[in-house]
Image (tube, rainbow, N blue to C red; front, side, top):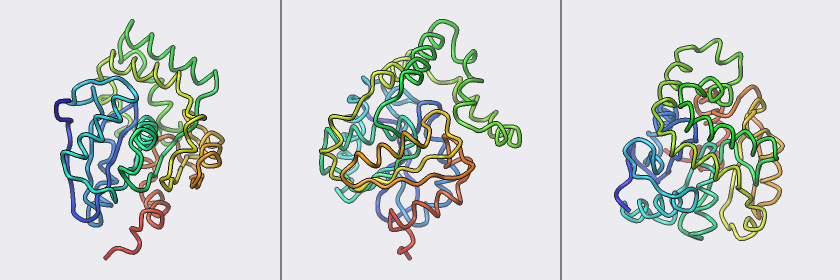
Length: 255
């Protein structure tokens, strides 16, 4: 597979950052500012996003990212943090490539979506290809941010809206349909990684109950609910998120 669109920041033990369906790698700007002094951050545009070549979701995404990790010479001690789609890709990586990386921190994740969630993904896929990304950008921002945060941070919403509207509709639709069919229930028992699931209490895309169920089903899963946050806690509540993930990723022990 041709090279993925990757940026690298900072220095230290390696941490791969994988973005959500609704955005791209630039969603991690605030987290990069906070973590680049303690980690070497490998920030990837998923296949089909930015200038990364497309692949079949989700297995193709996972194999492409693992291939990029191999090309970069990342060790098995590398950790992975994923938001939304990025978290599902991280789980797929752990299932398909066991032992390739170490810990996973997942922001808004699940085993599978209930039928209402599946229907939403199918609707978003159909509208993306029939009327375009701009027509569904309002719905996308509602999935990303709670109303109070969106009202108080119009600059952030405008920035994320512009990024969302730049996503290729076909790539977006294919990922939506893959998530609509997602069901990891039969495969989670084989994941040997330590996993931390952090879900915003106001996350309407992947509600806290889904994250708690995922943690319970994993051999070594932990769940934390983040009060007041939505589907993008790394944007909305960066400082509080860093406080939560630091003990898990060993950040609090770094110089």
